Length: 230
Length: 230
DNA sequence: TCAAAAGTGTTGTTTATACACCCATGT
DNA sequence: ACATGGGTGTATAAACAACACTTTTGA
Image 1 (cartoon, chains in turn purple, green, brown, red):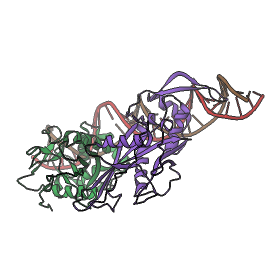
Image 2: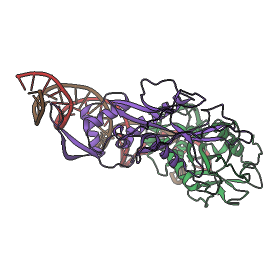
Image 3: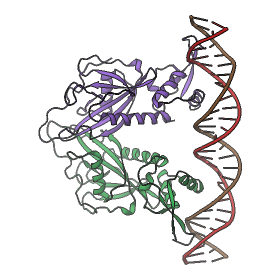
């Protein structure tokens, strides 16, 4: 599942004169676990910013498309495929030291926590961080995260991208908690259910979740697990 | 006003071995004139696609930021500054022939037709094209235009970016026609005025436009001429 | 006096918000 | 029997859509 490929190992060769800009692809990977929105960060193994946390990324390979590079990075770091992955923005001021300039194409991805398998490595280790307790980040990665978060919040309001943060079967409460964690505010239970069903975003199944000392919950599933504007 | 700089003159040097991807910046420049949405295209002066129409663009210069490159391109082609200009998307599959790959960062800009001065050149001449009568385009520029258009239509609904398509003073009918041209559908006059005023998007001035054999129109101006989500 | 664009209100419909109690289960 | 989370309906407010006639001017 997880490819053990040292990320960014070919990054930042010492370059000499006729410098083309470096082209790198980064992926902001979000998940929700324990009612908390988290982002996957990687601890840099080399300078600059050695030992600092950063958004995972690496150089674009020859003849590779941006979408492919982002999907590859995502697989390298989480083992997951076929999740929501979209281009976010392209930055050119993140690494002012790069000779010839540097262009960083940022993507963002939404993954179900339980289907992720983090690679185990000494260097370039990765870890989930709550957005409420971020460490200081390499490059200007705070601004990238801010932007990703605001894009995610917007998308939650008018698309079905939440499908990519949940397993195939889930309860209405689970879904609501995902929304609440991301929007960072409580929402009314009745209105939430009404809207999800009226929009046709989710459908009840025949299954019930008999878990805990309370009434079993209806199990729902997304009507569509492809990105859709509603 | 207009800098006579041959665009893309330093583009596509014949490159040999250790190819970094080419990094180019393109600007989709929209305007509305004669109740018609138009886009500025440039006739390519060199191969590939010599003689074909394309979205204006050029290579990113060393140490130049993307925003600066886009603003520079916009000035080169139209002479205007300080208009709405936003990054659109980054493409990597537009030029499959480029050795080492090519990355194209597309921007889009909104300009007031009357403040544009097109440069006069033999090669690389530019021309406004109605979106309803586009020629066939170089690279995969049709898809870039499609994307720019849908982004523009969305932005018209929830921002004040129309300010960048109109002169400082205008009538409600002019404004409405801009909206109708872009959305490609008629809207109700009363509802339109109500909404513009209720949102505080525009403000009446003391001036009236006495033009033509009919009642003079109130002159309005945008409450804010900086990009704002409403 | 006519043509041409400017200007103006009301009504019905849809959509969003606020809010409180009963239900099914395990212990 | 009680604690726990699951499940439901109604009333109000706000936003949006449909719709037709009068006003002011220049020719």
